[in-house]
Amino acid sequence: MGYTDQTRAMYREILDGLKEAGIYKEERYIHSPQAADIEVEFPEGSSLKKVINICANNYLGLSSHPEVIKAAHEGLDSHGYGMSSVRFICGTQDIHRKLEHMLTEFLGTEDTILFPSCLDANSGVFEAILTKDDVMISDRLVHASLIDGIRLCSAMHDTYKHSDMEHLESKLQLHSDRRLKLVITDGVFSMDGDTAKLDKMVELCEKYNAMLLVDDSHASGFIGKTGRGTHEKYNVMGKIDVITTTFGKGLGGASGGCVSGRKELVEMCRQKARPYLFSNTIAPPVVAGVIRVLEILSATTERRDKLEKNTIFWRENLQKAGFIIKEGDTPIVPIMLFNARLSQNFSRDLYDEGIYATGFFFPVVPQGQARIRTQISAGHELHHLEKALDAFTKVGKKYNILGKTKQEIIDMYGM
Amino acid sequence: MEDMKEVIRQYVINEYVEDDSEIQNDTPLISGGIVDSFSMVSLKRFLENKYHISIPDEKATPEAFDTVDKIVDLIQEYIKG
Image (tube, rainbow over all chains, first blue to last red):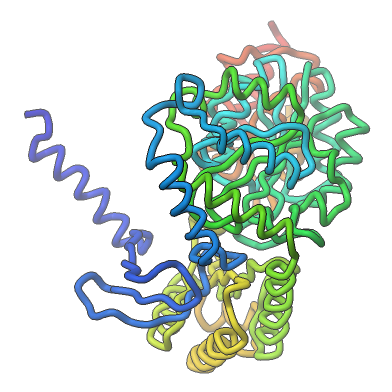
């Protein structure tokens, strides 16, 4: 037997080390559909607790929307449960191509290819379109899945300081001799909730003859006047060469993702992207659900407008209450606590008050930047946000951090 | 040699350090988490342009780039070569 007691002990030691370091992840079991109000079993075996969820990526409140559920049911009935195949063998239905056309229209691009997830899209896209003669230049804070995709690609890779356009320009100059240059960024950065300066980035890319890839997972469906994404917000629709995004957040929250952009780049993915070639297609009920989501979002901006209103209320009132938040205008609102232990205690106390919001600390965010990350949804009503605000204020008072500066909080709790 | 060390040290500070961390000539850059191994490429290209040398990829290892002192040793090898 290869799995000896010694091997087992080695793994136990690693896992115990994670617990001791306070970075061991535990799941909380939700017994209800995903929504603003959920029922949670935590810790395992305890009785169910009704809490307000303020940490889901359910930005548009569509995860359990009756019309989306109905569409998924209908998709299940008409197109079956699974395809038992990758796309290019016998895994492509009419609805897969229909969804690709709808995404192309929605995002304002030339063509789209579906992937089992956006992580898969990001894993596959670089190796499909670049070679060792090329260079990828990425923001230093891009999402982990982009980093994985970059690692899998033979092109040269360099980084620029987060959102620092001068630094990006110096990198474009440094690598001007490469055959192709691809600049890579998140549209909305998931930890800080800030947006990439896409107008400036498009200008630079045009000046230095580089392509631009944007992961708009935390933007598709709600950023920009009609929710098309960060490229709409910055008035550069049609100028982004590759957009990757997920259906696992604002667009219904189930699963799946895509690469959308220049026709030839999408075609290269269809020929060469390994997660597309070697992993199953998105299940028919999910495809049908996402189609309905896009129909809803194309018909009215009501949900993204409500999200915007909720976000303004949440940001303004947190600041009035005396919290330090990361500035911005997206529904990702980090409340800065700086100290890891404080963020864990704060999250636990919020849970006791009926609010589910998670603490983030090193290595997920830089050392000394621990926080509670809240994510606002169009599924939140005013009473949800008011109750959450009361709970935050109560816990904030307990730890005496309201109205305090960063330095004062650090002086009390350490980095 | 000291000039070269100072040029490289300043480049590392400007390029990679985003807080007030001190960088000495023996500060571990890559194993110390200051320079992401991903970002090493710009350091390599900077050195090649600045000193008119070509460092083969197989020699540009995280170990060889780990401190200012080691980087200078590597450069010297190629300037002499």
